[in-house]
Image (cartoon, rainbow, N blue to C red; front, top):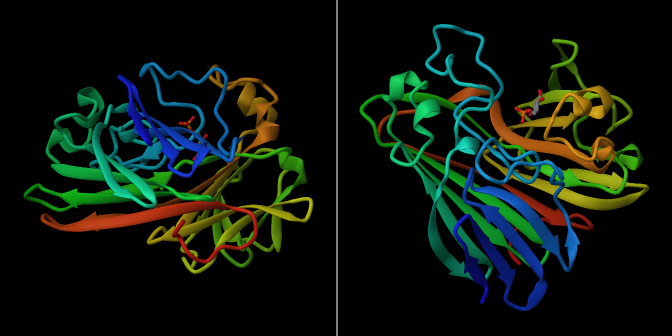
Length: 300
Ligand code: BG6
């Protein structure tokens, strides 16, 4: 069976490569594992809660309709907690949409969203449908999100794939293609132009890179080898995050405590400004993570 559904999870197994698999928790439609030919590619905390009591620490949590915490009291997202409600809601499994590459979909709307949190968004007046497609290829994992406004009025939203990549040692890793991009450094609370040809990691890192041409592929290079490529469609921004020592220590669900050395979040999204979606309109965006040397297409 290529697709196995349990009460809380859906597991896809590549039809020709049984050690290539992806596991998705229905809570948050969170991808919690992507194994390629037996090798895990995503970092998941050993203390991550997988029982729906809080968003998953690791894998690919989904951020909607606000990234971070809104500071403007007038904005309809102001009352929402950090990163919104998509990652705290149990999504509906909609089934398989393609055999090759193997693709499934999950859906979320006001009817199955976490009520308590959803009601904090414009007093529960926004009507929407989210469709998440997850595609498992030979050497890639693609996640695509479609947002539809089914209400009577326009709404604003952010979207972000909060991807925790697993790396052998983050201090040996560099990330390409961020040079000359505008970035907001969340730790310094300052905006500047990134001048490093490759960014490296030896302390806490939390930057929002803005409006990057989607033709640019981010590559994680480890000791001269390309480990991972991150491609984007319609997602102009990307957060790059590593909590390092102190911040990891402060997160109860972050284990082992030195796990920050084995993870790197590259988070494609639309977060430097809002997408405004009029009633009846749809918007979509995707990320594709693929392994090894530079890839230019998304098919398996
Ligand atoms: C990142 C933010 O996207 O998510 C960080 O840039 C934040 O500032 C991190 O700390 C984790 O957020 P959370 O809500 O999952 O702890």
